[in-house]
Every structure is written in structure tokens, then in C-alpha cells.
Length: 157
Image (cartoon, rainbow, N blue to C red):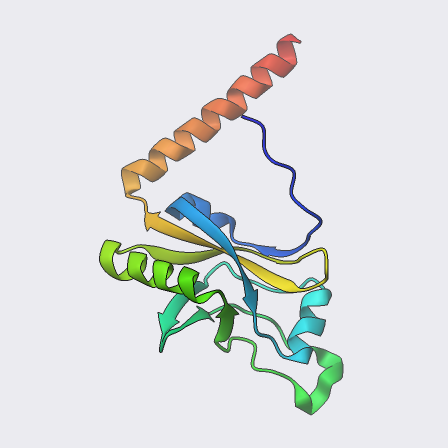
């Protein structure tokens, strides 16, 4: 199965661990409400979403624990690096996500933080189900086997 080519995006941060820890069921693109110094810091390519998650609180979606470091030239007008940031999604999508999290015990994990082709910061959020330890071992085994297959095919020509 061939991968679809991604549209023009400038990737800022990726949560590679999420694909290992969770079985991804569905993903969607969400806008993120940022301050000016946060955007400038993101444009330098510095951010970390590895330990972050999304949470539905007070009828809104929030990105918790994402780190966007301070922008040094801003001086005293800087932002807090780990503050909760509001995610912008349509009401219909928000209700669907909240329902899945409450009823089915799913998790909202951010996969990527990037600038789209118009230069607007976006977050790719996945509706995910946690994997058990044996599932993680199986995924590791499959990945190693695929790597070994590719190596054998490459060496034999």
C-alpha cells in the first residue's frame, strides 16, 4: 500500500512514541491558539509534544503539557513554555471526540505539530486506544522483521 503524499507542510515536532504506545484509530487536523512569541519560537523549529495529550474540558479541547520554549528576543513579554493551549476544532468533531473519550475510554494523542501551506500552525490529533505490552512486543518484532527483509532484498539485488 503506497503512502499518500503529504501536502506542503513544515514539520515542527513529531510524537513518534504515540504510534508505539497507542493503536491509532482516527486522526484529524486542529488549529491551535498561540501567542505571538509562541509562533516565533515555533518558526525557529523548537517544540516538544512527546509528553503531551489533548483533553476536553469545559466544552473545549486543550493541548496539555506541550513545550514551546521561550523566544529570547521577547524579553519580559514572553509566554509560559508549558501552558495549556486551546485547540480549535468544529463543534461536531469536538462532540464526537468527547463521546469516544468518555464512552469508549480512548485517548487524544497529538501526532504532529506543523505549519500548513498557508503558514498557519496546526496539530494532528489522533483518537487512540492504548496498546498492551504484548502488542508492543509484537509491533517491535514486525518492525525488526521488515527491516531484515529490506536488508536481505537489498543485498541480494
